[in-house]
Length: 374
Ligand code: BMA
Image (cartoon, rainbow, N blue to C red; front, side, top):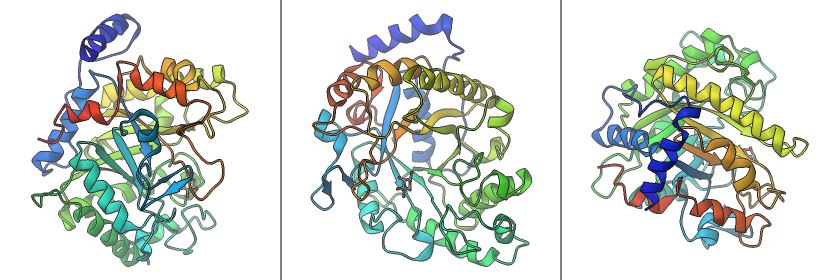
């Protein structure tokens, strides 16, 4: 029934949309494993059915709980898991046992394996420390940093060690038969802004592209990892496709394109909705032209202060677009009021449940039926 609704839904929308009837996609990594190729094509097909919902650190902690007792704020509300699970590798490069938000990497590995076994999708971002200043990802004090880690730079060997740590982790994600688990990898996100050391005012377009291509090449060819789907994820600081794609490393280096956008409490719902629609139009047009999958790589409204935000602001703004997924940021256990998904008792819980029951919002159980890896 849900499927039928979705078909009707898309047919009804066709006149108003710049939809293409499914995209013909190939992965950047020509040696990707069969399961990785299958995941990418499953994600493509799923855009016929609806938009997948994702949540950062969903199994690691939430409001009022933390692993090992925890489960999932999404599950506590709707009795189902998200379709996409975001994780962050920040601090893996330092050899730390925990990531920058205190998630032990051993736990993250267990969660990712569990997600895959249940038929869900894992995505990894990387708030990587600054290799030149040894500050955090947000240390933007020295514009030499990107140059210094490229092959001609004095810290290239440090970056190689850091990439080795990332590669070890990603290659250690194996299913019950020992096969590598396909995952989405989203490095150097929000590169159109200047708040991370890989940001716009800290490196030239050419340097950014070289950093990206070098990283992909190293993981694919030097480390022989073939379970990665590469996600190019810009900030919201673009107003047209030229700006959006300014630092796009090229079709041979990217599989999914997207942007990160948050609703500021000072921004009205109407303004946010129109902003989101404008950016999605640019994104989806670019994806159609480039033959890539589009996604909202991070989104949310901290504390979700409107009880009907999900069905009255978010969903009406995104449902017309043929998008792969939308990932909501974390429900922090270590920062008061820093949450982007509701939880039992939160004022938008009921509305989130309504959103969950809409035919074209895809969660864990929708994916279980699909066999997206085989
Ligand atoms: C930010 C905040 C921080 C967190 C960082 C990386 O948006 O949530 O608290 O450390 O992401 O996950």
